[in-house]
Length: 520
Image 1 (cartoon, rainbow, N blue to C red):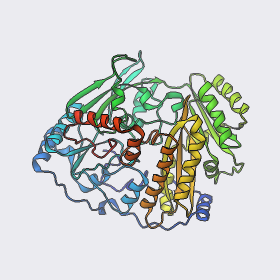
Image 2 (image 1 turned 45 degrees about the vertical axis):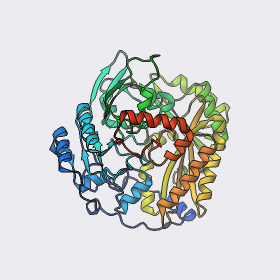
Image 3 (image 1 turned 30 degrees about the horizontal axis):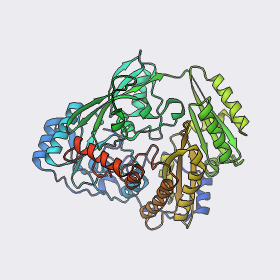
Image 4 (image 1 turned 180 degrees about the vertical axis):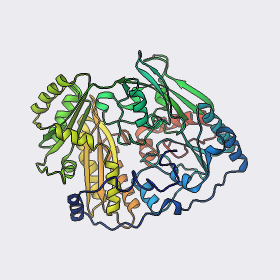
């Protein structure tokens, strides 16, 4: 069982384990100048967390055991507590306080598609809700259903590379396979997915599909949903298999119905994806721009006209300043990171450099790019360190057309700052680019106050209202979960809401699949 499913306290109430990340002294001093920090209360150890006893009928438990085996129906309080929520900062704050909102009655660990189908049949017949659980990295309330009784279906045993087609360059992966293990298995065949989101160390293939994940190298490899050529889904009505060719005009693309469905329409059990040869060469470098607007012009030029790097991200002035704290760099401006992967990247690097320089970029060299690559997964660990230091840190994201990006950036920043009048740092960056637009990702660091979760809800609501008012989407890659449902309903409109509800009723007549998540 993975670290989030163990009964020990390792990794409890934090992204990593204690000591994974330490704030530089200069950063701690800066935070103390800007925010009112308060020593946090001690973390309640996992064995001391109180979880009510399992209330499932013996007949239901016995039926589940008959499907997956007695050893794979777990009712221990520590295991259930670990499967009760995701990894948003409110989740971590509650975990640290020992407050488990809604623990599953049991954790069920099927070993394959047929067992998932059988588990759904048992739960549907008994009226017990089901929450699919992969890496447990949701940051939008996607693992806390609106149901009193539910089981978590942990897909960790669906962890195989099923097939590789080296001629077509596709691979079929089971849904519970962790991203690092998927990368290792594919590398044995000379291939890579190229999908490296910040949740990479813990997230699973099925989770990527269910949330329309987007990785840090999306400029070169595409989003995860771009990679999916087919998938298998277990539903209470039976099996759905979609995707049998690289492209099709045989009706609507039903892959898109399940990609991003967040466990509400079925449980994704395997995914067939496009793979690419392992890159023979990699090159990362940094550039400095005087302002965010200057950097945006350069990024847009590369996204629209090329040559497009594999990784392309631009930090705004505040994120650049905070990122430079403790590094000795104090030249201000905005940091752009460009990364290149492929058989031979030299000509692309040189051509992109001419574009970046023509738009006012000052080259910072390879060390700036390599520094980012070395620390690309640090942010969630630094959040742990910020909580330990008495600050509150959380993220939000969106996407918009290029013409709206400057307005969205400013309005979201101002909305958050207005909602946190006693002081906050709002960091922003562009990290996923398209010909028509880009994503915006914000990190908010503020004082926790006496009600840190309530303060964040108010600030997040203000930011979400600003996103909606500017015509941007409520989520680019975190998903909808429970947190974004109201804004999602507004975004898609009443007719589309009714359509989504109708599909759910058809596939999930008893309404057991992740109730209260995604579907308004």
